[in-house]
Image (cartoon, rainbow, N blue to C red):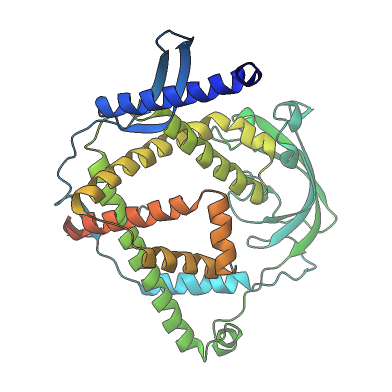
Length: 387
């Protein structure tokens, strides 16, 4: 009676046990480094008969680990210039610029507040590109009166207009226009100039410096120089690290586990879409670029997955480990960055299975530190700026 009542459960448990033990034994016998979960297909499981099953699995890539010490790296020698400081301070002034309304014709450098509707071949632009609603009609739109602002050739035709005036503007959408369906077409815009606003930037003086919590303008300059130098140093360090890792990965050609590549690709695509949504990019525009987004994400994913295996090989060979104190320090830094209690952050990461990602990040950083410390670094002059 017991056997009959629980026959299904007993057989299921026996099947799991037999297949699990046989699978582990086969993996050990063939010395396989398995990635992810296997796909088990039952072939035969009946009483008094040998159990047979097929396991489809992915294994870690096989490759010869190249020499990772002495990798060639170029370090660009550069320093903060006077022009860099002036440009940075001008950006700070730009952020605090005011745009009062003025009662005069629009001039170069002003801001034009306009209402417009756009057509091509007598049809609304949305007939050609449904995602181009913003290009088809806008009210109260701010445009800087400077070359190539908005659509090439658009603002140049507004110069000289007065508030309340209407004008027809003709444009040629460039061949590389951001909305492909409009590339190469001719556009006609009915434009009404609502307001002319003059750009007024604060003077570069002590009063401006005090708005930024600096003692005086000279102290502001010193602070800007220091910030720019720190940014330059950080960029140089990132560039060297990227070069070292790329120089290593470029030497390795191997097949990568599709499941890991697909999983990483999905994560990258998700991040790209989320960032674009936060920037206000419409869904239609992202859909139009979905193939390009996927291809880019897939290429990045392959490099990341390859790096994952290479990093672990080097870490194992060099005895590199992530200590618990290092994990705790990184998590505390993250908690401060996100303004979250330490315990809550750890619980959240653990719940979403992201603690391992933090560990992988630290291990990768330590391995790249090793690559950089042993790299052959050549100092080079920066390339001349293009005219």
